[in-house]
Image (cartoon, rainbow, N blue to C red; front, side, top):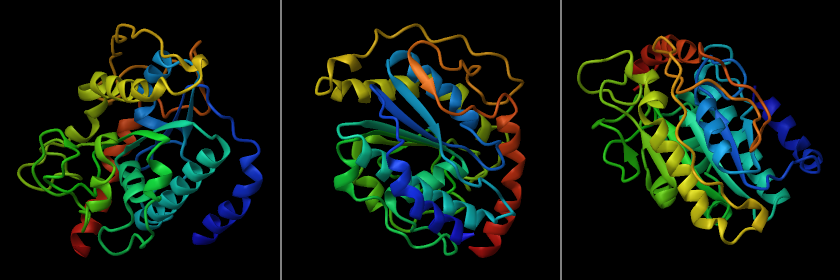
Length: 294
């Protein structure tokens, strides 16, 4: 499985010439376990952000997002490598670019590993995170939801959880260095990011519905804080009222994906309303496997 990462790295130089540099914000989304290829459950938030920041592009991270084939551990390691590669490639190809990253569930751990280093339970690798000097200017926001590598009491934590996750980070210093650009949402009862107390199996799929408005405002505000130094063509649009969420039967999908629209270009689709259904039961195997390893 690692050979596929080597191949991707080898091709990175050739791919750089084809990178499309966004006039506004470039959003990278890492889906959760067993979601269909695309932006998954978090895609609706990326679409809403794109409506408020003209010239935004959205890209789904291309990684396995699997539990068993390859294993969760291999999938997370491959995803971390891919995230490092695509961020480095984009920043190199697009001087002055602004980037936001969102990761859900397994995608949250992948994102945390890419920026903070692989410092969780053994089995995920030992790669360093992206250099802070590379991240400091271009990366304006990093948002994690239901991260299995969640650590209690970190300054960047949001939500109601007060305990560690399934695969807690041994050292969150590198995450702390990311400052105000990083937020990690974990609520009490989430069986993957909060291991204390009774389990509520719906919690893991509710972040987009519960915190969607807050996250959209957070990312847009972070972009606006640096937009004055960008070209005039990237001027942020006046915020519009938040779309009314569609009913999803508890799917956790904040509102239906809106496609490209006039203000943003969506490069890949999301997993649809069934996205959370893929995320929720799939990690049960990981919970059992992780408990056996800890």
